[in-house]
Image (cartoon, rainbow, N blue to C red; front, side, top):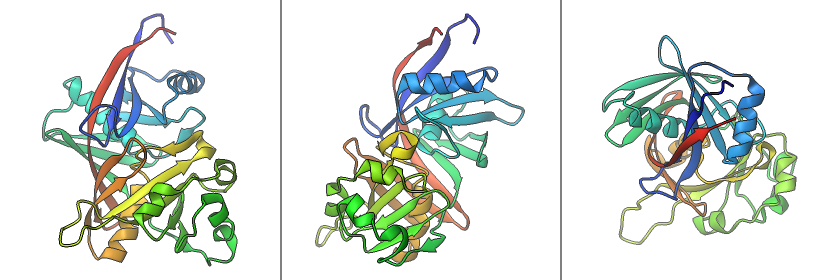
Length: 276
């Protein structure tokens, strides 16, 4: 990079309050540096994702890095990128911004403090017999017995019997990290209070030790799988997901054919300069 300082921001995504949701570092750039620098900065930030934005003719190029690798799709860092663009006056209320990514063209629309992403749906493509294949050893690796196991394009999805089980699982990260998937989604119907409409439709957690992220606090791209999965089970296209990690986060989802709309807020909690 040049000798000039490079601005960066830290944003908590899928939350409306600081120190909750999922933090991402966002680095707006004027041009692309070499990939080694991008990975080194992501390692230095040591957050589940660091995203980089470079203007192009139709919007922005957008790339996402964990501390270990570049990834194909990330929802929370796209929400965070949108919040930074809004902060910089480059995304006014009602405006849609296009991102060119490794997963094709993605868009984000600002509606007040909420950003709505248009992402590809990632439905379960294969279901596994509970006594063979990836499902056979999953109960031991997860510390809970799934009632369903399947895979999407990127991830393994395991449904367990209740939200309480989702909250209580204590995975063996080494075993999960050796599985031939980006990560593991664990999910269940959200808790319901008798006589009341539930605030949430489903609960989840997401583990990706193979990417250098043992547990991702709130994963937008996992909801690209959760949305079609729970839409089929619940008979709904609009739902609210609750990722019940220690930081917790809320993801509004709407299934639209082969696309998923993801809605959430982002709170900028820090800003600074990279000097190297």
